Length: 137
Image (cartoon, rainbow, N blue to C red; front, side):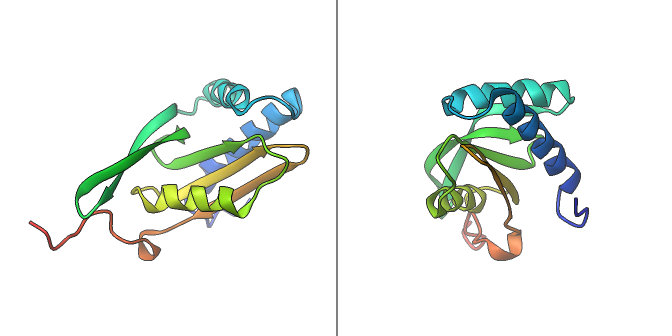
C-alpha cells in the first residue's frame, strides 16, 4: 500500500473490508446487500461510516440538487458500490462528479461483479471548481 496517498490508511482498511465481504458473499447479489455487509464489516473494524448519506450539490451558492453516497467513511472518503458485470467509464464519472460536487477529495469505486474490481480516485481542491462563488457576498 502506498502511504503517500491522501487517507491511504483509511482507504486501505476500506479495501480490506471490501475483500472480506466479496470473499464471503461472492457476486450476484443486489448492490444493497453488499452495502449492508460493508457497513457491518466497517463497524467491526471500528470505522465510522454513514450509509446513504445525503450530500448537496451547489452552483453559484445555491443548492441545485443532491445525491446519496452509498457510504461516507469518517467524512473523508466517498465509497460508491456497484454490482455490475464490470466497471465502466460512466461509473468512474459518477464518482468523480460526487467528489467535484463536495469538499471531499478521495473516493473509492468498488464493484461486486464476477471479478474483483476497485478504483481509487483522488480529486484535490487544486483540480476542482469551487462549490460556491467566492466573490459573491
